[in-house]
Length: 235
Image 1 (cartoon, rainbow, N blue to C red):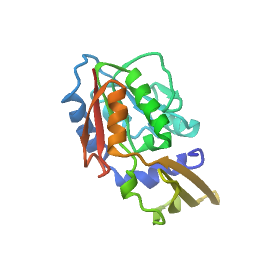
Image 2: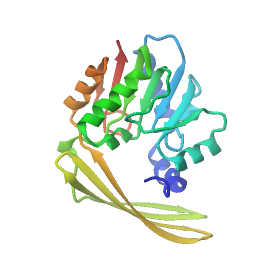
Image 3: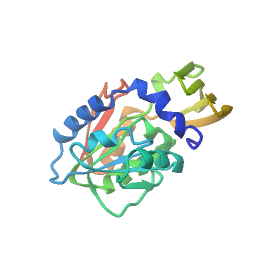
Image 4: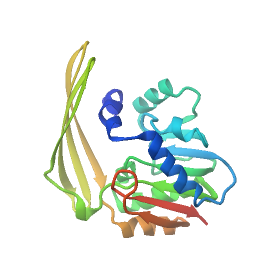
């Protein structure tokens, strides 16, 4: 679903982030808890790889994403970083990492609670004993606002974007985002729509999934962007 938005993704989302500072904070969370000795880090749902060069200050980084278009952008920007295509719920790289992060609320795409549990188990299976798993969650059910309208605007010399989002509910615990994009470049103007469905999981459900996967979990209520953060250490 990100194949058409990969090329505009950073123009829309980068202004919301201070990637060097956020990576520094994540590094602190990881190093304050991990007991493994290695330096391998996997960024799951890495998107365009915005965090990768900053994590590379401390770790040997690799990235994984489901979208071929996102991975194409990442390869162009971060040559030499090992990248893998796979679903965050069920990927299998056949090896373990000392730290694994899943940021940008991507874990919401697990959609259903059994798939969330499987995703966290997959993360744990790819983490060394004493290693750390960091997950930035999507919204909890009690704070999701169905019917909310959002407008994102990009105004760059060679790129204009108007992006309108309408939030909704597909099921009691599944949120929806219907996104309409108007994109203008020197080559012309195009419009396209996206439909996203993300699971609304409670703190208790996240923590239970971590514990079931053999991860001792802590919850930071603020995290990077106010949505919280789960930090698990593999027993």
